Length: 313
Image (cartoon, helix red, strand yellow):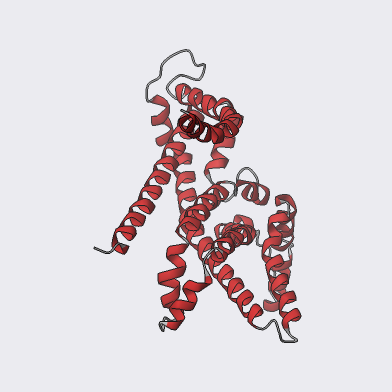
């Protein structure tokens, strides 16, 4: 009985510590979302059952299709770019740190430390810059009388009065802004994952004659599966928060290429269009949840297949 009671206590202890957070999540997130789901099937006053009317209105809405297409395009372009650039920078920093350790006995060791420290700080610094301050700097460069137009005028000898935030370059500018702000954050996550890989694995691979690409493919990438999932999830979450930059850069009615779902939700909120807001929220949450479940399932399937392949008969 004593051992069984101790086992039950050990199992219950983590849940007791998690209970306040779980209760807060259920009360402030779970129950309101259930109410949103209920209201998505009712009229605007919440007094009459409307069936799928709100969902049909959302799907047939031209602004919703435009915002959804832009959001999907933004995710499809920014996610791979962000993960690739942050992984490359993290790998370069990790390789530089390893090289620095090997040259620690040389006089240039302190100088290398300063260079790599400055590089890390430069990449992480945008995380600490408020979005309003960052967008103000971009406006100084991109407005009709900004630095970029003045620079082009000096080169070509012609007058440039292009408002770049409302031109065909609006989408690349938003992508560049997102990458510049979040590369450092994802780089820190990749660095944590790279530092958790045992150096003995690389040493053994070198002794077996494995090259850089072979070590990357057979050691680094498999060991970073968990980090990959974390970086991907956080990158998607941060991508939906890019509305701040888009709003501050171009206002409530930006160029059509950067009109995202948060813009549409903001307009519906101002018009108190409860039916469309709730239906779109359910559709968006369901889509993201389905993608998350699909991604986790694929990762677990690959992990199981790798585990079976590594077993000896």
